[in-house]
Length: 106
Length: 121
Image (cartoon, rainbow over all chains, first blue to last red; front, side):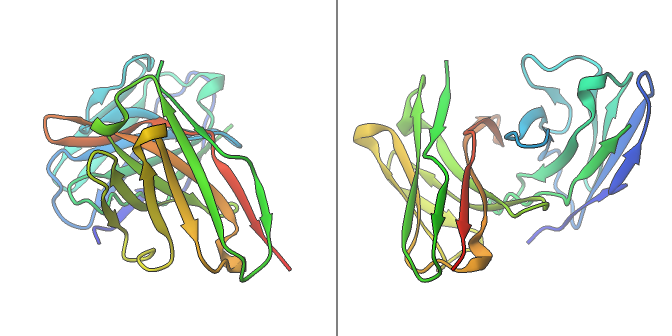
């Protein structure tokens, strides 16, 4: 399995802040990295695929970068609806492992 | 409009069998892999396995191999996740998701609403 490690596990921020979440892969995964947002009691929602491609309908304040083993998700100016848990996922291998999640709190 | 609609919540006893469903609409069901993902209470997402409805090719996470069975019925655009012997540790929300592809990249672009399975004596 390719291990995916996110940091931090939780993060406190305020509306308007710029926030960065990091995801590290246990081996090089090129750009095979996706990001999802999950709100309590809801299904996950795809934000970013292929490390930096914004999914249709996702606000442009979300962006992704990185390749190889180190990746980041950045929210340029936090909005109230962005407080949620964020997961990275590798698709380099068909085991499609997720990171443990980063909970973004006020 | 792409939709994945899952079957309703279940409460079962340890040792019982169970099959939950995920009905797809709004796209060509046989052309996209379907994935199943587990989320235990208060925990993160775990990929369980995927199936290609076109030919029923199925891949499992080693953590779930032999514990569950993934199947499809193409005639009704529905994917299934089943257990023969439930355990208390199977208590979780289970999601199905469509696996999209783009230049050899794979990602889960549409998700079902989730099915809560509670296993308790």
